Image (spheres, rainbow, N blue to C red):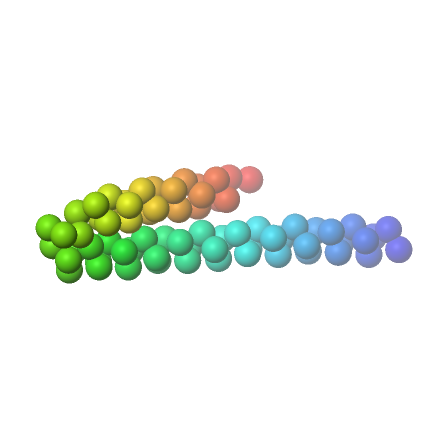
Length: 69
């Protein structure tokens, strides 16, 4: 019974990590999309490009945090 509970907890932890990875990569894709939209907007999208860059930096930091054991 204890082995079953231990395995269930391990699976739950792995699922949580996978969900965090998925959300982080999704943020990175959103940042890429925002960067492309800012580029299309030209000079008017300059401030939007800064926000997109900041979002990409945060997503990259989260990715590196998730990859550490």
